[in-house]
Amino acid sequence: MIRYLIKNNFKLMLRNTWSLVVMLSGPILVIAALSSAFSELLKSYEGVDEFNIGYRVEQDSGLSDYMELIREAGGENGITFYEYPEGEVKAVIENNDLAGFVEFTKDSYVLYQSADYEVEGIALEYFLNRVMNESVNASLLMMSPAAEGDVKLPVAQLDFMPAVDSKDYYGIIYIAYFGWCGIVCATGVLSNEKKYGIERKFRVSCLSDFQLYMSKLIPIILTAAAEMAAAALITILLFRIHWGNALVSAAIVFLMISAGTSLGMMLYNISDNLVLTIVALFVVVWFMGFFGGSFETYMFSSMPDIAKQLSPIYHGNRALVELSCMGHSEYVVSAVVYSLAITVICSGIAVFAGSIRKRGKA
Image (tube, rainbow, N blue to C red; front, top):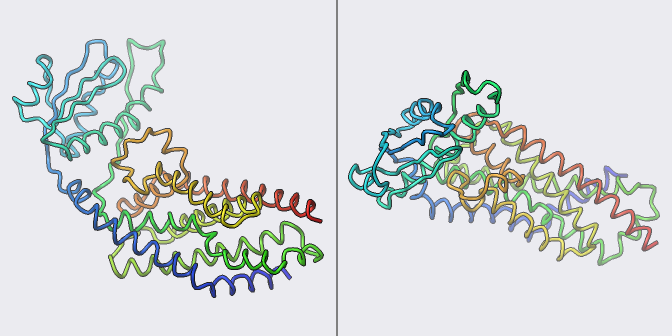
């Protein structure tokens, strides 16, 4: 019987013209608008040539031993570092036509950016963040406090993300973003169940609460996945979006859709109100997208790293974009784990909440 329900719900969702139009046209229109509006920003990022940076290191700075590594990494990315031990920072920048200046203090750094090199300043900030977080900090953790006088620093090869086209960036992340709102596909089915009292009829069936839940969850996921696949195909044809590793990217998007659908079903089973569910889900997804790079590209994001890492959309977005431009990403595993964890946890809560509500109305 559960197979019949899954098949029937899937057909009903595909007949819901309103949800099909929203879920299909929504990402296409947003991708078209944002990729055009922000094309100059990412084009400028792509067009940054070599530029010069000044720096000085305090005597007691723990980062002095890393300068050779930082200079080499900078040279590979078109950033040349020149040391200026003395002089006022502003005067040094103006007199030497520098894009910025970095003061490496005891255990951190202070970045000064020239107003005439705004894009270069953003690229420098991103570069320093990657270097400090992925190389220097990792090395500092490996240093033994008892061996401060004789420390051999491990040198790691850093992978820097190439320039990303705005169409590729927004063409990828908004497919994932709208996939999180897959509960919209079920509006017709869920509203009809309440309208015609179908839910009460299910209570006398032999199906368990878990089976009833899966009879809705699976067709919602399949419908949302089909619509996102169609939207992705259309945007590929219209804007020539490059997805990179198609199979891995498709798996990540599918798991993100599963997570978003499970989250939506959990909210619905708790609230028992479709409108409240959609509003609450949109708010949650908006905040996750806000910190996850759906509105401000995560390459230029000024959000704290801890806030971005807490957003499952950030892990998915970063994995998908890096797969597109580099062919690999360290965030693939975290994106998969995040999505699976949300799917399992939210599904468990949804079944439990539905069971409680069912007993309360029995």
